[in-house]
Image 1 (cartoon, rainbow, N blue to C red):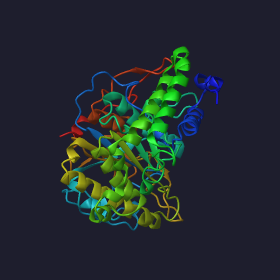
Image 2 (image 1 turned 180 degrees about the horizontal axis):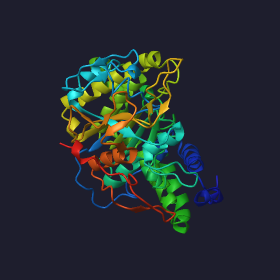
Image 3 (image 1 turned 90 degrees about the horizontal axis):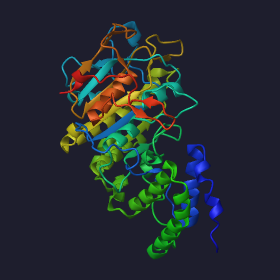
Length: 437
């Protein structure tokens, strides 16, 4: 059948990421017999990467995001005896003077490895805007998509394993920011359900290797004229995306996505929940050289029945996070892996009539561990009722600058977007150097 080249003429004119994504997936399936799921966006580091990676403490990042707004008073910053504490008890931990809420007993046993930042503060109290700010360091705008922190890290220090994507997003959903105005090659590979692993990553049934290669060669020949007449970043980026998908299909490292290869005892330690499996999969992926892995836990918007809801939500996070820290430490990976626990804002110290807590960006908590961060400490302080930051306030931009610094990025480096506007990895944020050992 003759090739209709005109069907490819519009690629350079596709305006938004979702249209480009649909185009790539459609072309891959129809032309190659290839089922790639999110693989067409896995990309490679060549476009947008700096020439010489800087020295860094954290070779890889595991970023755990509790979407909805985790209550700081009930988890990382308890206030024993305060009226605002409600019915939640404070737990002693393995770190002297570092208390945690009763929902995190397993994390309390790993507290010598963690740094709790109790003085987070923001002015953004709406979920989409606050989540976007935490992920990108910038206010959400309709005129631009900012890169996520993990995309900046990929750009800054490159990939560790050319066969695997540099950034994997577990359970995040399509609305989570990833590459933004960076090249498509820095887009995250999304996996909706960590318990299912990477789906549709093999050749379609009946497409043997020689036939598959002939289709790849046909596609390359068909695209050559288009590439030569449209020498654009997006075109090159999606060519790289195809190549990355094929490399991953053919790689022995594809097994990194299969948590069933782990011993039963390890899987039980992490907990056979979506979040626990996500933490285990994250560990497997960074072992195989994935630079950044994000794991998202939903449901933390506890406007009503806060305490009952936390009783349902927290155990999976407590077990998965504690097992992750212990496992990384036992494998000698913790000092080169930065583990982040973040949320978009805290929840009100006052408890409403429905036993809930509402949005509260004024004061909240996040956590860092490994990657050169000092363990067993609390940084910053809120007042006796958890209402106000009274010592060492940390903005979201400062928090992200600290993560970037751990990964080896220069928070003062200015990068020009395609629109000609200047940006930095954490906007005006500064890294908190006192957190590093």
